[in-house]
Amino acid sequence: MRVFKFGGASVKDAAGVKNLTEIVRQQVNKDILIVVSAMGKTTNALELVISDYLNNSADLKRDLEVVRTYHQTIISELFEDKTHSVYTQFERDYKALLEFLEINTSGDYDFVYDQIIGFGELFSTRIVSAFLEASGLDNTWLDVRQYIKTNASYRRAAVDWQVTKRLVTPLSVNGHILVTQGFLGSNANGFTTTLGREGSDYSAAILAGCLQAESVTIWKDVPGVLNADPRYFEGAQLLNALSYNEAIELAFYGASVIHPKTLQPLQNNTIPLYVKSFLNPEQEGTKIAADLKMEPEVPCFILKQNQILISLSTLDFSYIVEENISDIFKILHLFKMKVDLIQNSAISFSVCIDDMYNNIEDVIQHLSVKFKVEYIKNVTLFTVRHYTADAISSVEQGKSILLKQRNQHTLQIVTK
Ligand code: ADP
Ligand code: ASP
Ligand code: MG
Image 1: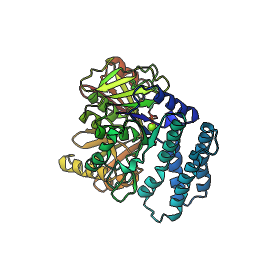
Image 2: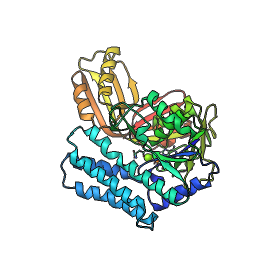
Image 3: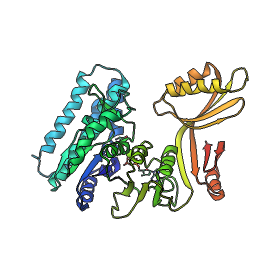
Image 4: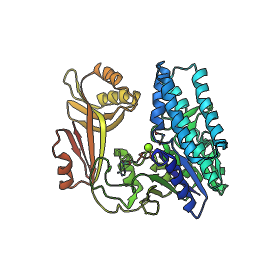
């Protein structure tokens, strides 16, 4: 069995769903598990719905309507037959969303978030599955929440591998197309959980690992993994081959083409990962596997925006030692900060962090009890893997550099 993952961009409109269908049709071996994200920017649109709902905003109706109309338009462009069951299926799912809003009494943001956000993937997979079927590609729609089991950490759930493996393994004997959701899981109480934003790549890897799949292909709007994000760097080059370790490093530093958690289940099971273009499916793309040498060997550029640079020193100018560092990390961990760079000297300690869950004010408050805290919001972190003198000067040019750090393979620069 192979696992294909189609992200939001690949199914952002009716043409995208048709394109996905053609890609699947071209496959000689149809023993494929297809993992699909929410369509286009639906997850962002549902985040608005969630904040309207929890803030009792008058915009709730309008923002819900945006989500509904968007899906209805795609459905009506795909299915001429207005009596097709996909129409009633969508209305049923949409009604379930309204019902949740009606009956929910919890004010727990993370819990409510996961119960609402998951509808994006439920809508998209119903539509994709129905369209494949209508196009002569028999398939079975699966509710991934019955397979991927997690703990109850809403919005950042951790997989319960033992239970997940037991539930997923029987799917491997299926022998035909399966369609399911990325991003979602469920906890022991049956509530929807999510694996973190952009987590559908990871879903594909979890399922592939449990199935001992032959390969995973993630279909993207780029030709494969490039040596830089083409949105920000001109002349980005395709990397034909990468080792798992190199791909992990790139994803870890923020190359957002692959979710950082994706590689581990694949590496553990030696399952190759292909990153291919859904616009040019016949092209080879990038192959990631064990022991592959990076090809071509070029510097790789990674940019992370909206970072916060925090600099700390002790209130009495004493040294920053193990005990202080441990206090700092306890606080960063408590507020779920993602630390992207650390630099310390005798009396100061700097971290560049990603405030994924909007907790920075709390962090600063807690740190200020023991430290003198200075921070700059909205800084950019550049990482260059396999740097050369030319590569360094190209990123440094014209920027005011707040912090710089390098080791054998990696150079990092924080700029404003
Ligand atoms: P999905 O549709 O699966 O959610 P994403 O939008 O998350 O896909 O990922 C694809 C995007 O990742 C590309 O459009 C590109 O802008 C960005 N990207 C960032 N870094 C890289 C890189 N090194 N190589 C290719 N694409 C990259
Ligand atoms: N739909 C989710 C998101 O936008 C998951 C994903 O697309 O990977 O974050
Ligand atoms: Mg995405």
